[in-house]
Image (cartoon, rainbow, N blue to C red; front, top):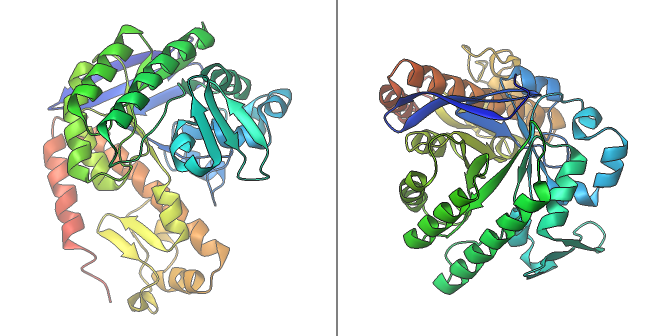
Length: 376
């Protein structure tokens, strides 16, 4: 732990980076995967399970927590950490993703975004300053600038307009953030799938001398190859001594390929959302537990895992739970998936430390490709 926010880049192996983010509430081992706790809960999980799976940090969402229970109430109750019983670091997304995902419920201009609540239809205005104010009341450790995220494909002029406004909002967020000892504000690189806009955004944000930098506006409709190309273009324009966060990504394969290009932090709803729908990510690739072939399969999802959900429950039982729409099925599969993601990150970090990340990546992908070969 550290009294200040610090990033220590410990080792590189090709483009892959091994590091640590140290802050008062704990140390984040990078590359890191952050489970998504949008409204103060990682869906279908106890936070003790999230921690035991290997998570050093979780993510909350400013827009959703603004609506309920409300930032002022959270502050009165001692902050988000106290409320949800998670004493370790929390990163809050600024609400920028909702600028895109709730486009039918919002109006946007230079001042900020006016949302119509998806809960009760009430109106809420979020400026860059208000976003940072809310994140401060939540007492999050890493706060994200408010930005405008554009779904791809999009017109170049629209992508440029959103990128330029996001830069102006980043400057306002930095002023609003001020000095918060032990905490950090990250900027967000935008620019869609246009290389020159990505570089312009990254260079302008670098001039703000922020504690960390995120790459946003990817995995929003474009093919994986485009996402990786944008990373290859963007990351060299960002300072090597600051953490790099790829927002909303992704699949285990996305993570491997993005680590290879220099990303340090990830978040995604995929492991828990997939778990609730009967899909498991395993060492042997994806397993759709709904399939009839699992109905009498007494093997666990992964007999080598340290996670009880992976090791101690049969596929037959998981199949029964999911097909019966029992909540326990989604809970167990979410637990398994989060544990698998953290086991993958542990393997990534170990392989970078040993100077064999490329071999680890190839071996992992080869095992996925072989599939669940022992299936009954």
